[in-house]
Image (cartoon, rainbow, N blue to C red; front, top):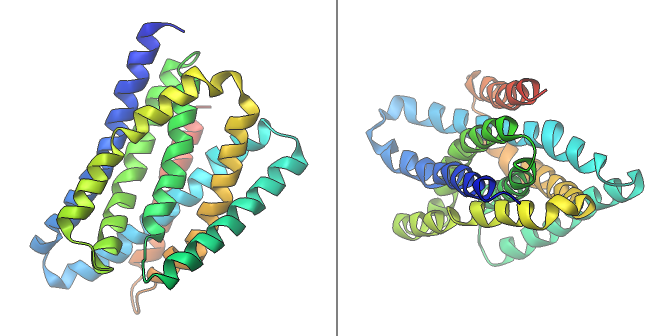
Length: 238
């Protein structure tokens, strides 16, 4: 391992993680948005975050994860991720907690940060682009998760503190990817496939139902724009 690579991994992952509390700050600033635009903006950002999550599954997590695993294991782990998060979601519902957006953000952010660390050993330019895309995905996801958790009863201050604690989680995951998982592609692939199944379950169970808005075409365009973000990154990295 080259020390400069490790420093770069920590810096890139930290910058990507800072977009989580930045998304929360954007939700706090929402009170200055005129009420006539507030509902449309919220639905757009929920849909944009959903589109970004779908792009992460379709263009990063499943392709990269399945390349590292036998087909049967890849399919099984994908299904296991969905089943585990069905049980997690039901347990949270029984407790009256609503944290689907937060869980989906974590399931997207952590394996991508691990992959970021693994990529830095041989493709710095690709890793920089991937960090930028993670940051852009985290921003609407942080916004949506902040609103969801605040509406479920948590105070804005507690949610923001939790989001600030999320910032060092990215560098920790990147360090794990660089120091451990770079030489264990099957484990990294398993994490990616499991996370993909969990994200897809949460998207259709909790995220997508929040998107529809009567007599408005803004939310579906938000989903298209979110997927376009992931597609652009996928094509730019070749």
